[in-house]
Image (tube, rainbow, N blue to C red; front, side, top):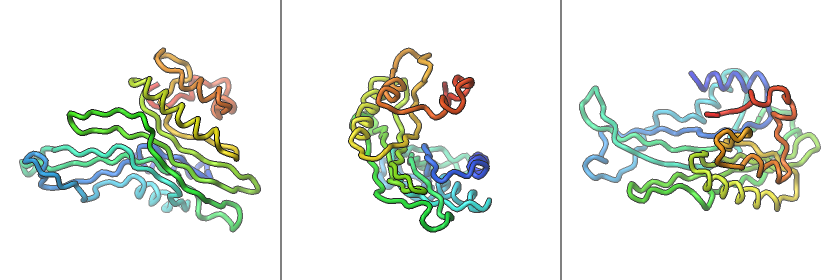
Length: 230
């Protein structure tokens, strides 16, 4: 139901490119083997957010395809099945993706050079074998005579502010080498109003030369443009 609403918002604005974060892939193994020390990963797909979104967009006459994507956190844990009384294994794979329109007239939008990578600095919990991977994906676009790089990044939460800052610095160092203009989208987990008082990631991005599209288009509603838990 939530992805249907997302599809409706996309169709209402008709963007050529969409950046998506936390595009979950949820898989199940029933019965599971984790509780008995098994290591077979769950492979039965229950929900594929990207597939659902693209299907819902197509149902509304909007044709999109994944141009670049990145798998991040991939974790699996036992889950009690109340119907059978046994334990299933539930697996969550977190993904970021860039969607582009495929229904534009020839020559209006050209996509090339898809790239993706993880950040070097991440949260790791060796005791449980968990790595909270974060990263970015990108494509080079030629659109109506303009050429630029479209980047979709997912930074760590502000609860791990030092790691978030290191990820932002790594991202900006990479983008600083681009020879074309860059449009940076993503889930930055960074409060522009600094109400947490623990990270200056937003200022770092602005100081690197980026302009906040929301602040430019809606200057009087700047505080109302915040996302996530801010």
